[in-house]
Image (tube, rainbow, N blue to C red; front, side):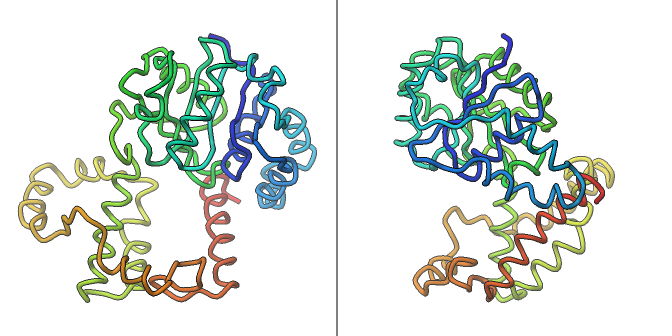
Amino acid sequence: MTIKNILIAGGGMMGKNIAFVFSSNPDYAITVYDLFPTDVDSGIRKNCAQLVSKGIITEEELSARLSRIAFTTDIDDGLAAQADLVIEAVFEDMQVKRETFAKLEERCRPDTIFCTNTSVMSPSEISAELKHRERFVGTHFWNPGHLIPLVEVVKSDATSDETAETVMEVLKAVGKEPVLCKKDVPGFIANRMQHALWREAISIVENGIADPETVDKAVRYSFGLRLPQLGPLENSDMIGTQLTYNIHSYILEHIEDSHTSSPILGQMLDEGKMGFKSGEGFMKWTPEAVERSNAELNEYLIRMLYGK
């Protein structure tokens, strides 16, 4: 099917960034829907300030892209009926997501493709009560959505191959790097690997092997430095199957394999150590340090992606 009209359900940070991504294609008409008024224009301008300051896009280009994005609080204004593709970006709450899609299914065409932007929730479970489940698929945009190239396209237990392929092509057309998760499993692809690393990192701290700053430094200045160029399976092939087998035969029994959250996380919660929000987590954070960390992440991503 031809995709022209795109509806973003949810006007928060991710919804705004997703709308900006699709605005790169002048053939798309994009509408952001939210229950509450939100200034999409200023929100996107704020998110894209570094892109403009670095010369990635001009103010004129940004304004042109914003002109392709409309906003509504009225789900019955007819825009849902025109939508060829819907991307939901509401709260990570199963009931809220289900209710959102129930409302959309009443108003959209039977062939409208439905996408849910969730990082952990099951697309099969979210879509369980829909009538046309074959046109439903997960699309996990990574934050910040306007910078991180990856989008995980996650098939539910009912997603048709045609739906998954169409969404993959649409995402490629707006400059994303979609990957297909063939099975609806918790964490999909990238989060499974990310949190396996986090579990081991926390375990190292918990067991007094190294402090938090050392753990992060060890990652940043070793394998973390080469990961953008050398993925784990290519790395395995590089060093050879025999060496990978030998290393795993020795080390895997010593690596953290607990199936519950670390006690140290529960202790931190009890002590009100909420990370950036409270000023202390594994490390201490001043407001200036929080602001610097967020800004430096975007600076790094822009440098990696655009060389600026």
